[in-house]
Every structure is written in C-alpha cells, then in structure tokens.
Length: 204
Image 1 (spheres, rainbow, N blue to C red):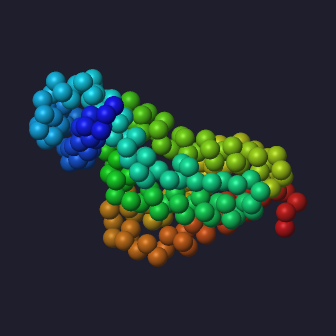
Image 2: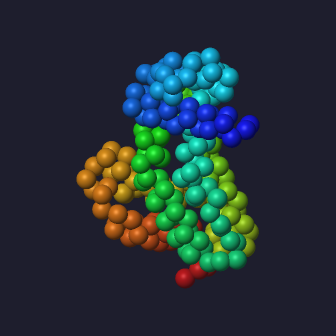
Image 3: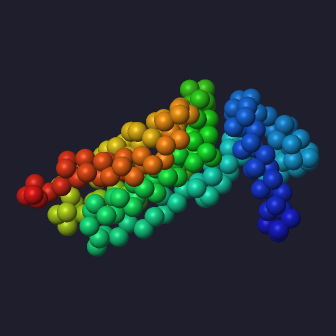
C-alpha cells in the first residue's frame, strides 16, 4: 500500500471510530463513514468489504496505540511483586484512557445484538495480553515463586483485582474516576492481595 492509500485507509478508520463511538455499531452505516471522509462508498468497500472488517481495523488501531500492556516486558528473573507492579500500573493506566474506555463501552452495549464484535475485541486485546501474562505466571510456578495452579486463572484474578476500583468508576464515567492519585494504591493492594493468595506454600 502506497502512502496515499495508507492515508486514505487511516481516514476511513478514524471516521469509523468517531461514528461508532457517537452512534453505536448498529447506528453507523458504511455510507455515513464514506460521507464523513468525503469519498464514495465504493471506494470504502475497496479497503473494507464489510462493516465488520472496518470495526476490526478500528479495534486493531486502538490496541496498537494504547495496548502497551500487551507488549510490556515480563522478565522471569525479576521478583514476582515487582513485575506485577509494573504490569498492573501499565494495565490500569491504559485501560482508563478515553479511547479504550469508549471501545469497551461500545462493545458491551452491542454485545447482545452483535456478539462477534465482543469476540473480535476480546481476541485482539484482553485475550492476547492475558495469554502473555499466563506464560510468565506458568514459568514462575515452575520456578516455585508462585504456587502451582492454573496460570490463566491466576492472571484473570490479578486483572480483576486491578480493575476492581478506579476502572469500574471510569467505565461508568463517575466522578471518582477523576482521582488518579488512587491508582497506585489500588495496584499496590492488588499485588499484595494476589501474592498473599498465590505465594508458595512455604513462603513467609
């Protein structure tokens, strides 16, 4: 794809994101997206043959920009609490940013009518991040630094702990979500609670 085509494609993705967030998936048409960019629907179809493929591109674009937690380094030679601290901080910092919150709200709002949207979002974002983290947890279990169990369950529990406070307020756009000073304390508490539950049996 040459530069002009890449810019055109990005314009369609940006327009689709804006309209999806404003009007919902069902309330957004390919014609409205093409019209916002100033091109024809036929041109849009040459880049994205369906609205679903365009939604996938929107998800990929947001994940590429804000999904740092999916690629954060998880060194197996560093202490469990230290790595979890870095991972938790990155996770909640990114999840509480506007584009990811808007995407999550969109997916949840449309999940019943369009379950494939939820599948697309989960596969391209949360599942990838949790799979990477589960590999790290599994290695730590083998090394005896985390008690043996299901690595994915452990990751899901840690993510749930991290998302139990500020993130819940942010999803609902409640005033409590504006107080970012509480983020560090919440991650600290998540790491402490997780490690108390998953530390090796013989650890003090």
